[in-house]
Image 1: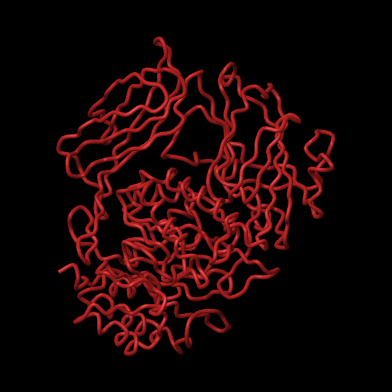
Image 2 (image 1 turned 180 degrees about the horizontal axis):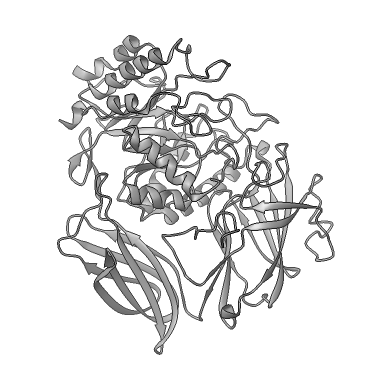
Length: 569
């Protein structure tokens, strides 16, 4: 797979060794009038005129297309030769993510449809597959309708302010998987930090014997075999387990092997970590100890790949530069990041807030938009559930009036229903309705005024709020300044950010220090999230440039960030 872009398996948390990466060059066509389905572009006689490199979106340089105009409908085609070892097996076609409405044909046969731009989906193609095949994909994507969540993707022709180049169509890895008749459809893992129990929920297609093996540093430490079909539950206890933490992100590997009448059917590898996150009063506890969130805003954009990281190394690098500057995690902002990012967050001990890209739909969410949002959000929780790095969920960001408060409350409770183990912020910043952690976004650039904003909270239950006349009353939750800073710096040119640009780098560092120390020194504030890790296009308020070059001495940032927070003492 040396010449295949993004050759690594996209799901270390759901790994089958029987797989085939379909990334690389595909035929491509822009369907300007959105009449391709009516004109039967999916039939084999239709020839596509361009070439695109998948999984990079057509707006990106790496795709070879680099068209940043609105492309409401686009078409892909690829010839696929099935490996001999896939013969007589069940075969599944997987898409990591395609924005937004996807239709798939194989050899002129319509395989299926999927709605939503951020989560994986798959179709079984066993009955349609031949030795040599033609796969055709159509993606419809028009974010100007206000009916589809699209995060920070611009709804204008151009990028502006904090809105950036769009991503249309395929933007994560496409691949095939092969299994025997019985296979593991899905699973959840619940490690219990207090007891050492690991509860497994497996969804199995076909009556099978399931052998589960748990490994610590490549040594099998325990195994269990159960019989099951459909939903299957069992528990394995690990005595004297090693916790997952920021300092020591220890992971246990797990292997599920399915048998039927002694014949191996399927094998899936994954992992988990023992990590406990809970709220006690105004504190957030990680493994029963207070943790101060020293987070940085990460928007998941890349200059040459837009939504798609050019390589796995780029993903690792973003986490490493943040950790080096003394941040212990990130708020993954207005985008559902690919599973590989979460895998490396798990591996490197990097805390994550998972946030849904609700921008693109109006704050007063229509029923049509809600049906898309809630289904995809539930799928996000299901996909990402057992990543120990994820310490909280946030389905909405900065919702405005007129918002439907009961709908926001419903989304909060649905999130809690699907995961009882993590705190939930209903809508980050504003306008809060019901939330486990009360957060705010404060971009005051004057450190003295910034300090005054939070001073009453030291002696009273009076917090600074973005919309005090609209926000739900504060009820003693942990209080998090989940956006601050945003100070722009674009040496020698104009840029977009918050407030006046510092005149020198020294002035920037001094402002960063004073703003950050206000939060570190406050006895009731439980964390911060600085805006932002790197510049994104015209938004030049990153600590690094868009091409991931440091704008300031990282050691100076690190020295400020490593100071112990008052609430941890």
